[in-house]
Length: 88
Image (cartoon, rainbow, N blue to C red; front, side):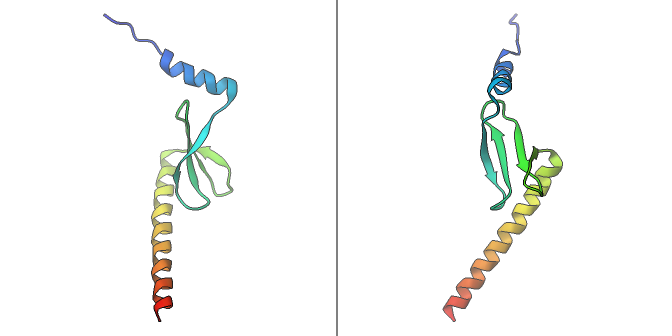
């Protein structure tokens, strides 16, 4: 019977405790709202309404998905409008 240990999960957490997180943009929701993930411990953050980094909870994940959908539909509508006005 093989023993399991928590060493693989412990090493990234120790690294982040010693040197700090290494956040990388994992998703661009809009041009000013992004989701970040630590490359070592996989902690997820997002920006709030004031531009501060906060933990990505299910509530904020849902808010970001709705915001992304609205943003994409708006930018698509503006692209179509600008193409239509350039043709005329």
